[in-house]
Image 1: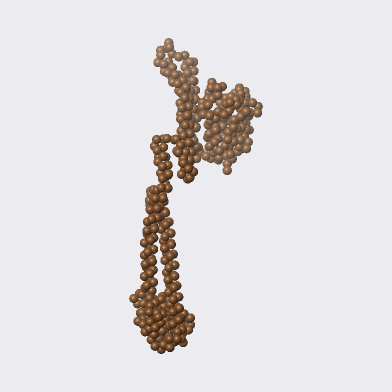
Image 2 (image 1 turned 60 degrees about the vertical axis):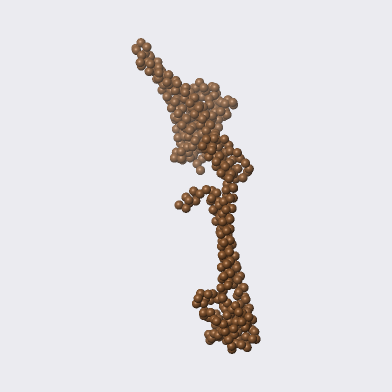
Length: 455
């Protein structure tokens, strides 16, 4: 619950709160340290004063001559203390009004000569605190000076009150300053947020203005890069839709025309009905157009997949995938020979996608190979090479062979949609590989696919 509450707060309020807490902790530590140092200093000064006065009084001639009498404090010039004599036999005498506290073992040790001096704090029956200093005062007795700590406690209470009030005022000032700093410091963030929200609402992918070179400017630059990637992706989608609609229009128009002819033939009388051969040709044509549409739709779906599903990524042998693709293409390219030599290569990826890409390469090689020609397929060290004996690809056409729906002038009269090699490059890129198209050593075209080994 506290975590959800924390993240529901604005960034400015969190910065101000953290600043206030940091300042409060610093002020509390400083105030506590100053209070403890002052308390220790006052205590040390009082202890030193009591011991000095006690030693001077015990060594004075007047005191040694008056040890048999009760000595009031004013005779020692110590009106703020109580003067007490204690003997080793626990005898106590004083001319002052003694506070109701009991002298104990530390004082008796000094009177018996077992300790040179003692100083400690005692409480009377009313809870008042006294600082008691004891020094030797002749044989078998000791002089005890007791001073009330009320004035010192009162001074410390005043000091604590002053520090508490000053600390509270300092924390309030820090809170106000933190809020002001956070509000002013985060103003560029708010402007950037407003611009981003405006772009999101209006689907405006134009770059944002960038000022300076601080963190906000870097954030705006990164966002502009994201906008550029989104704009490029949207443009690719639009081109794909436009190209797909253009490519689909021709087979759909032809298919509709053939179906209209068949419908008219079915509704005509026997004199105007189509001959059996003509009807069979129309049906074959319709079947071929449906297959062409199916292939085109499959290619479009394949290209629309920006990333391969993780569930389809498995460990595979590229040689087995290539062998299945060769078997498929060999069945439909009966007039072409295949020279295949495949070495095992373990990779990780989508077996279906890789088989589709290799099949496209082999179909393209079979389409351009002459009757009786040979397609050479080699797999070594993760590089699959396919050579055909066709006319090859001109230097001017090489930069365009992987573009979607691109077809050379020579291939426009041949079947195909111009998506085969585009799918090949997409699949290879998804697997972290590389595809290269060039000239085969014996003439024709060479297509090389490199797939990295499994890590």
